[in-house]
Length: 161
Image (tube, rainbow, N blue to C red):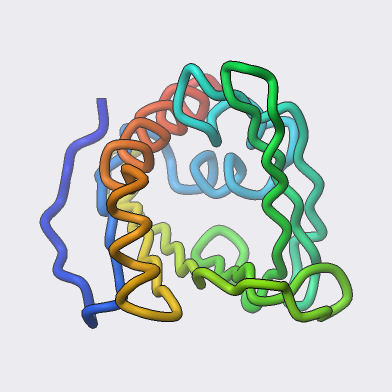
């Protein structure tokens, strides 16, 4: 199970998930950038991720589809804003394919991956929202529990690589 880190948000619109993951940095990064791996951990169980499509480069599009236990699918399109292989990913839902503005921007995610020694990774997800209301909504949706469960699932997949 991942080890929690206590890292404060930078603003009242940000949520932070920080963990030490018991897997090498490159494996954790791969779990965020390879669709066949994303589908194995991205949604908190009993939800699933039936498909993921990614063009991992600045300006590249991303589509991750989550499915609820009832089978209803929830597509999550977005764009990669910055990609530093093995170290950092910045993505947003403010745009969809080809820089087309989304109907309702919700968040920008900054992921960092740092070596923590002994094959472990310092994994930090900073999620900046467009408003305090959006941040509060994300918390009520179960950000800490859901993203925490996903971090544990990510660790399981990354350890197997």
